[in-house]
Image (cartoon, rainbow over all chains, first blue to last red; front, side):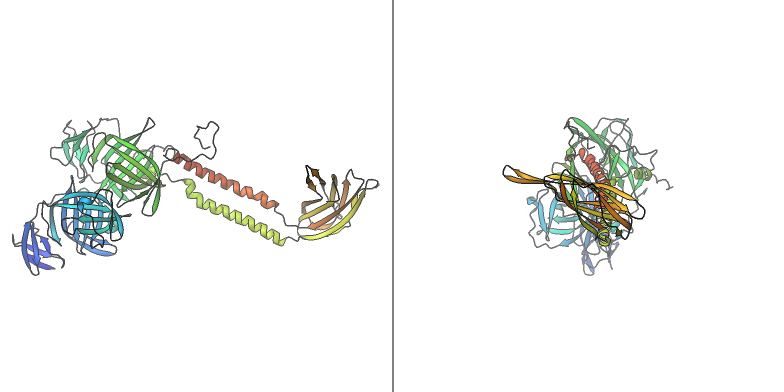
Length: 205
Length: 433
């Protein structure tokens, strides 16, 4: 745990994870870059939308016997819907939309990943020895973020992203914002298997 | 009794087309269909613009009223949307109903109802692999049941996708009863759901619906077969009986005395004043069992009939029986032929132990005949085995027939109907019975 002061508004900030590089100020949504014990303002994030997500910063859960805590979030829009990439303190991601949950980790596949324009829906792509099918391919609109993140984000940024589904419950995401693209692989997990605690209460439920 | 569900956190607005009050219950809702006028409105847009229009029909009452909460398989969901799909097969329209359920944590589920058969489905997380008429997902292989174009003909309530007027898609059902896997394909997009057959009673209980669920018609595509469930036990039972029968047979053979008792040669002449012969008295020992009588007669292109009486020397009890011995041979068209046998074997059952003798009275057109009679006590026999086998097999065959008949009726409505075991003479009749 590291305490810092927001260079924009002077609010108190906490870094939970040692691996975190960036954090959003909870008071003014400024994105802060951590430089050892010093911090630097890198940008301002947009207002997050109320998407009804039951996950929040501080939500705890369990994946394959290992506990995790949600420490950061990026919210995206696709079409008329939303989805969240929650950053976990185990350096993984919890993708979440409309009651579907996937746990993903950064992968460095040996295979050559096809370019974004080369992908067609339903086409097979080999990642780390497994074959995935392209399920979605779109420019996803980054609405904003909160908490701690391993890289800088920008509100309004359109990230070319492909979602791929593997055999059975395997799932992968390729983010073409960088070159080479960032590859994340993981699997869909049932809500109950994640043993969540500290979820956001939903009014009426 | 469970406590009454909490009131939903609903937000309301008025229908842009008719002014009726509409309620949005789920945070993931994109569109909402007005039950009063059939308009489908954009639930996300502040002005709630109309995105589609369906024919309103206030006569249609979903079995699960919108807004009701209930429990299925231990999980609570709220019914938020209802639609009717139609598919036309050879000019006949078939309709089924789908209910969209929602929970803020678990997301969406579907209840589909056709002919009062219910299935409970959830989105496929990941990918199902299709090869030919089969689909595989999570170690289960599903067989293609039906495929066709389905059109949405009625909508009510809210949905998490953008419904268009008269929206149609290509739907394919794969089954592995009680499980099923559905593909909904429109253009490049595929939506898969997976689930299983739901006993309507569980639904009525879980959602506390009034009255009894309407009786399902016919066999549902994913309806579990009662015969399939009983099949392992029935098969076990059959093999147990079969094994026991074999054991009895083997033990029976092992304990049989199979002992020669008496053998004797006789001469017959038509001129004999007394043609009957008797053997000396012999002992039949052991349990009450059979006696094998072997008759050998030197007949050639002729016959001999033997009237036998096995007589107990002490009680006078007699067991009467007759045996015919005939043998014919010759040459026809350059090939020799023969018919019959000079030796005949008969088994007389249920003979108690004691002192017995055999009386023989031959009849034959021959003037003279040499014959011999041999008696054996307690020979192994397969008669009971042959008799009991059908008694074991027939009920099992009947069960297997019922089991297949159920599957036949299931697949009758599919794209891959089973071939009937018995072809009816009219040819076009599809009845299995």
